[in-house]
Length: 443
Image: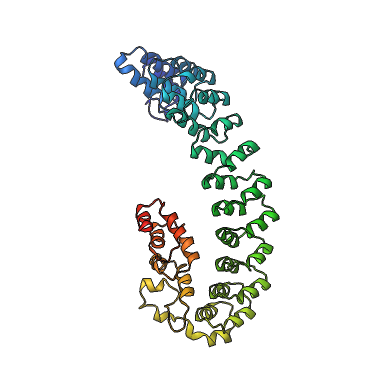
């Protein structure tokens, strides 16, 4: 009956007060019954008392009276005090004496409470002079887990030398300029990326962050709601090619910036521009005449390419471009008819292996450009095709650079094992988190 959530409250009170039977896990158990249970527990033999008290204090949704918790805050057993500190019904004033407690979980419990006043948290931090102390670290993490970090604690937390703390601070809204300056002085890419994602960051700080060479930082800036035309221009002219590639691929990039990037020296940048939807006709026409076949293939695959451009590309010297035009849904029927031999018929695909179906076409040495084909294979949805492509010594360096950041360790391994991988990229992979990648890069 005491456990049953359907038992009326007056019956639960009678069971607890008159019969000494309570179930603290039943959220309807009234305060009087719980208070009586604690009173009876304190009279028990010491061998059973602490265990019984712990069971009474475990539930966080109980009606445990505040006055009982205040009384237990000075209890001699340390883990009972930690349970009191963590209980949501414990009054704030009862936490103050516990700030000086010697039992670590008591301090952690105070730090984790959402209603702990900032001045109490400050006193907890000031207890420690050693920032490598485990209790200090746990308190810092607990404070950073709060929905909002109290402003008076930011300076203290900046002394913690804990990356997870810095990551959380960087995401905090309305940071004081002094804190932003200290975060920007760090070279940690993750911290700077979090800062660049902070929607309360001013355009002035975004402009300075845009000078950073980390692609992830600049990619975050490109998605910031307060980015200005000047910052877009700064990113479009960034010295780091990876940054320009990300900006060119970003769906928020303005048309005037895409126009600049359409003339970039890097073919991947131009190809990323060519992949944009709703490009002005003049940019499409410019990229349709690009010297790199890889870029022209993207234009031929762009669903918004007009008939005039598709007609022009239908007579391109590269077979892969003509094939893309043949498969384009908007290619005029007359042109499709002339290119019908480039389209694989459905009845021929049944005998093709899964791996071969993962590539757009089979390389023909007499008519295909191997570099263009490898760039095409690198974008295959088939993981094995991408792996073999990244092992090929003629795969373009920009594709190897991009794959070195892949989430798949096998793809990073393939880049590390490729004899054509640049030395600086190999040095980067020698520090990879996967030991097989590290070994391959070093060998």
